[in-house]
Structure formats: C-alpha cells, structure tokens
Length: 638
Image 1 (cartoon, rainbow, N blue to C red):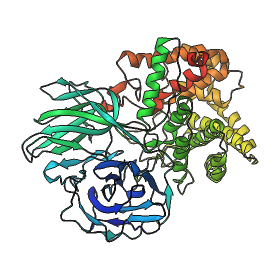
Image 2: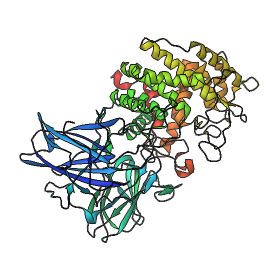
Image 3: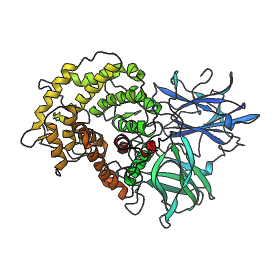
Image 4: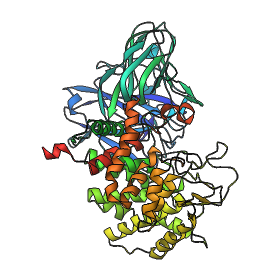
C-alpha cells in the first residue's frame, strides 16, 4: 500500500476490543485492499462487502483485495470498517498489536486510505473488554449490546463522537496478498423451534456460520445463546469441562436483529437460555467457494457416506482447513493432511491446499520442527505431526503437478527429517521426545497423557514403534521429494538401518508388534498397521494382517488414523479393497444410523472427551478419498 498507515481508535487498546472506522470517497469502480489485527468486517453504503481476516502471523501479514464495484454509486460512498482486536493467544491466533490498514484504489488513483485523519471510535454495540473465553483453542466469545447500535450498517450512516485515529507503530511493513478465495456468506438458515419451553432451535444439520436472530427483551437484559451439536442432555450442552459455548445479546426493549460477522459458530442447535421473544433464530453459513466433482455410486449407502464426507470436509474448510467448527477451528498438520487428500478428489482444487501448506511453513520453531497448530500463540507440540507435513507436501506436488512449493521449502523439509535422523541411538531407534506431547491417537495407552497431563512433568523415556514407523514413512516421502526436484537423498543408510531396527518390537509368541520398548507391554492395531507400511516387503505382513482382522481385544484404530489402517491393508494385499470398503460401511454407516449429518471426531461421538466429543471433524472425511479411489464412479460411466 502506497499511502495507507496502520491505525487504531485513539487510546491504549486492550484485549477483546472493537473499533469502527469511517471514510468517504467518490468512485463507481474501486478495489479495497485491507488487512487487520485481528479481524474485520467492511461495509460499503450499508452493505457487507467483505469480512474475515486471513489467519496469519505478525511476520507474515496478509491483505485482502476486494472488488467494491457492486456496492458503489455515483457521488459519495461511505466505507465503515468494524475491527475486533483479540489480544489473547489461542490455537488460531498469535497475539500482536491492534491495527487496521486499508486503501481504496480506483484506476490509477487512491481515493481513500487509512491515516491519522481517518475517523474512528470504540464500538460500544460490540461490547469491549469482556475477555470471556469459549475454549482455549478457539479464543474469545462475544457480547452485542443493541442499546448502543448507531446504524453503522445503514446506507445513510452519519457517525457521531468519532475522532481522528492513532497511527500504530511497529506493525508489519510488508503485506502478502491473500492466496485463497474469500468466504461466501450464505442466506439465513432458520432454525425450527423444537422445544418451546427451553427455547431450543434445530438448524436441521451441522452448520458453520454467524449467528443471526431477531430477539426482543426488556432494555438491558442479557440473553445468553448456547450453541452445540447435540441434545444428549435434553438441552444444548453449554458448559463442558471449563469450556463455555455461549454468546450474549443485550436487548433494547424492542425487536432487534443481532448479527456478529466475526465469530463463526459450529453447531446444529441454538438455545436461548434467558426468557425473551424470538422472531427469528438461525445461522448464516460461511462456506469456502469450491465446485464439487460429481460422483455417483450404485450403492445407496456408499453414496450417503460419500456425500456426508464431502459435507464434513466443507464444514471444516474456511480461512484454512480446521479440525472442527464447534470447539477449535484450528489448522493441524496431521488433520489437514487427511482433508487435503480428500479435497483433491472432492474438488480437484489445489490453491487452497497450497495456501495451508505455505502457512504452516512460516511457523518453523527453533528446534527445526513445527508447532501443533497454525497460526497459534500457544503450543503443545506433537513430534510426528511434523513428519506428516512432509507427506502432505509430497502429495500436494503429486496431485497438483506443482513442484515449486517443494523447492521453496526444501530446507524446511530437510530440517524436519534431519531432526529425527539425528536422534537415532545406538540401538538404531529414536526415543520419545522430552518436553513434547508424545501422542499417536485417542486410545488408551497411545494418547501420550499421564494423570491428565499432555506433557507429563516427569519425562519417561521410551522407544515408540509409531514414532519410528512415521520416521521411516517420512524418509520415504522425502526420498521421493528429492527425486522430484533433482536433489540427492542423503539418508539411505539411516532409512535401511531404522527399518531393520523396528524388528525389536516384534513378539514372535504373539505374532504382533508391541507399541513401546521401555514401557508397560501394550499392543495396538495402529502400531501394527504402521509396521506393515514401514516395512511393506516383510514376509510376516500377510499373517499379521489376518491376525489384526480377527483380533477383537486390541485397541482399534480411531477415525483420525483410519488412513493408515486402510493403506496398510491395501499395501499388504490389493485385493483387500473390498474389505476396506466393508470397514468404511461399518464405521461410517454406524454414524449415519445414529443420525449423523457430518462425521464425528471419534466413534464414541459426543460422549467422548468428557462430553466434548465433536460431531463434525475434518479428519473423518477420509471415505471421500477411499470411495473415490476404490469404487466405480457411475457419473463417469454415464
């Protein structure tokens, strides 16, 4: 931007603060370039023209380029930007200073830009400084106060009490153009009243978007709105283990249309916890614009599983891929690898996946690995997630044909695999990481927790079969990456040595691999399937697969890791495609039989994690990939 400066409303900003900015300009064709910390909604002549700051970092700040032409008229045009500064680290945000920067460009002319002369004020109708957390991962909730609404979203808006803005120093000087499309704001999805006494509304299926409702209550009364994915307790489960899934509306004595274009809610049900009159209750969904590739299956159940898988994928696809729209909305390397793989088949679109991978590449830590989430101001790192990033990068290049991302981030990929190679000990194996969360999946004995702590206070060294297998798989992926971009692969000896070393986990008397060396004896199906993938030529694999299929006592593979179970079955015997489809019918068909409209975090559904189990989780979209790859597409036949 040539003239614009970073600004904020006068006064020292504090966390959970809203501000409004007002400008006027004359043009009938124009483009708005805009960036904010932390979030923004831009109105032109009373219409919402753009919303949603891309999730970024202070050192990688992204701006949007918005065509304002559809909203412009002859003469004076009014621009109002409402900004929300979080000021609180979470799994979806890295705290920085409050700020807004924008320019409106018409042809060769800059007709408006942010500066100390921009009029601004704190936004009292979006109540500031509540600092009420929904979840530690998601961040802040909100309170709207209709008594202080000043008509900012009306065409004839005339601000009162606005002052000149303060220029904010120390903000990013270099801005990067947004790599992805802006979200679409869909028409209102009205909820159906299903419990008049408890004021509960059913949105019909899982949705993700902005609360939109028309409510009346005495002036000053706070109406709490709880949102959730189920009614297992006869009402929306609001408080779950310290989490608080509510937003608040302050009424003005008459009917008021509440709309908050910042905090996206993921839910199926809304419950108005305080007495009020409700004329409309619903959500305006926000969806990433993609075109779904038509796929038709002769089998009705498989078709339903596929369609719900695509729906799950889209509900977890916004500024970036996210784990779940209800509880976290966070980008994980492991979760998103599943999502990208499915997205290649569902949408045939690669720009979104590339942007996700690029965003992750901006977060390398001092230990050369990646954090748990992106962007995140908090971190509880899982070692093998960095290895999954290597796989996701390779798959992006293979599916898209674009190798430039590999070339741009080759050093990062080399660093990641190098960390694990260098950790090999005299026995040839890699030990668990001290100070990290040594998680593999959500089953007993494999979730890396002790006494409820993700990172135990006292480190217990062990050699973990999953970690060593994931390293082998990442080295194979890195070897392919080297071949794709004409680089020498430097770890052939380490790869061969590590593959030989995992034989130490095999127990001849049981015909199985044990999960850990140095811990209590534990057998898990995931560990054994990973051993098959890590050593696909092993003559033991055929018998091992039959043993795993028949066993009913070991920990099964959770939904998040089904890709490795299915891949191992197919690697051991291509004819097992029918068995994989059968397993998909069992697991995902079960969820459908329980009324699922999107696929769950785990097969336990809402009851898992102390009642915080998500009923919409991006990693569970994996049937989209396997049904596309393994089953005939009737659309293509036609």
